[in-house]
Image (cartoon, rainbow, N blue to C red; front, side, top):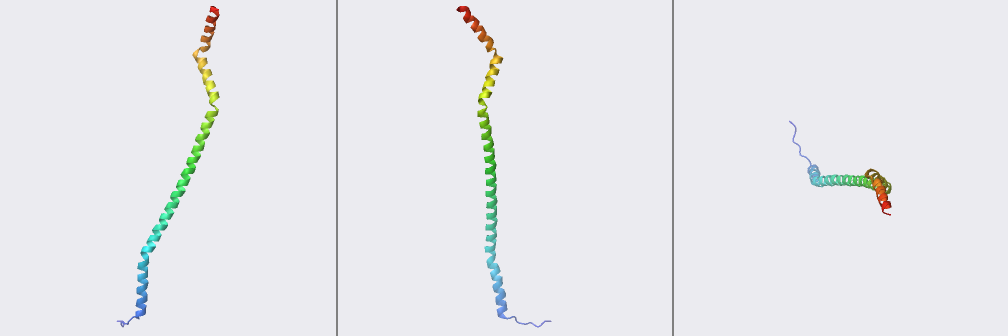
Length: 106
């Protein structure tokens, strides 16, 4: 059986102080880890927000471009539509008949 020896009080005091220091620092270390995780998550949130804004800006530019293209082609489209309506409705025949009737009265 080993001889029971006494440990120096300075050694036990140093070990006790080290243990107390570790236990005392644990909440601060945990909070530091939480704050670091929150900062990282917030950074990712802002990165996603910037990416979404860039995509929305690209879509808005494309929509504006399509609108301008439609505005610039409005005259030709309306002219083509009016020509098609006149050609299909027989207005030229009606105008020729009206001209004949007007000539008959004069």
